[in-house]
Length: 233
Image (cartoon, rainbow, N blue to C red; front, side, top):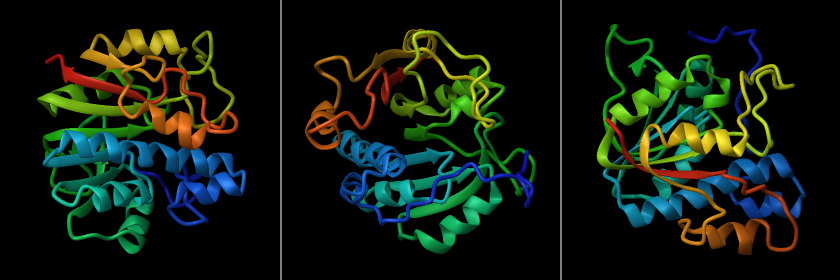
């Protein structure tokens, strides 16, 4: 499904550059949330050393650019189903190891291309604030597991700070907002290992404590973000 020109954009666009500290200093919570996830992700993936990385629902590409800049030996693909976002990404955020495509996380096809052209397979996939927008979330999770390598890694975030799952969230673009318990239980059906920030051995968990939430709570790490390893085929 392609977004129409007069549809409300669902993407975030950085206004203070790509350094999360600028957003912290400005008390810009929205910017802090969006930049912090990618700052954390680049460090996690650097230790994993993936050859191919997909940033699905990349929006205007600032996060894909952050990943590609830090993972210079990896091929990074930014994909989004909104052609307007992809056009902006190609204009603003370019690197030799970074490319963009219009893609659908549910069908796993490159849109605007001959029918059936797949997004392909990856060693690592980043999907931040994506599944809450989807009607067919379980199909999307199946696609993610099908197209990750057997020892692959998924870095995922979605609003999940509630005690109970919200089936009718207040924001027009959200189809669901999970409780942290329901989200973990859902992901355990698709991955052998599901790691959350509440656990002591969560990868680069100190980043959230010492940088983002150093002096006050700016990002609620309640099962968010999540590291998923070893997809269940």
